[in-house]
Length: 342
Image 1 (cartoon, rainbow, N blue to C red):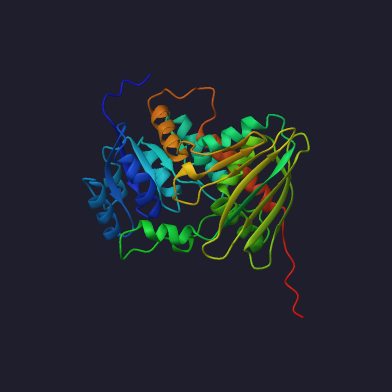
Image 2: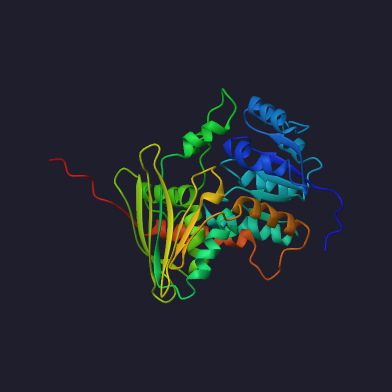
């Protein structure tokens, strides 16, 4: 049990929409945390965040950012170098998901953190989602299901969260990331990016619903905008996964579990209240669930304090399972046919 008597000091790297709209509002008001410093590759953006959330210091270097911090909170698109720097400084780490595109590197970072007695927490928000866990509890004898994500609202939602004059970051703004050598073509790399950038929450739900799930087929359409996959649980239960682009303004993120009883989860739109998430079962519809994002950060606080149940897998272990599954799907992914031109 930790003897910590002051808030945990957090240094935050990355001041994009997720920082402005999710992390900083919660972390700067949570009694267990104190945000001591911010950094961003755009200094003006970091200063705007510091002003809005009353953070006392904007750091110009990683060394300065880590000075005095208990945990580095990484909200950038590329994480590896920052995680390494924090572990070098004997500092705990929280990182946005995915840890990276190469699960071998993720596994090495997780092992290094564990060997050093440090936390490597990964932002797998869905693992803490009361709505998802309600659906899992409603279908104890799972016979399969489907998972769908079609998101045409994320960029507009992120733009609204930022101060005037700032635009949302995109993955195209980030330096290239290493990808696993076993991926044989550009379509497989695109499939991996789609699974880990757009489909991470769905994959989290899959590995929680069906430990030991394996992919049987995966197709990415010719323009790289729609991925379809078939997977089987350990008892040959079939699961269908669809991740697709959609016109602006349209959104669907839905999970359905089938069995002797069924459950369907319709998730809230990005950055909208989690209370709008709905779970539908044979007994009716339920909404008003607690915020999974707040639950995730409470779990981080508990783990820092040594109060998190030791028999539960760490979020780093879950991240490795998710990235392993994404790689297995990408490795068998085939390109879809080009549309016919009549």
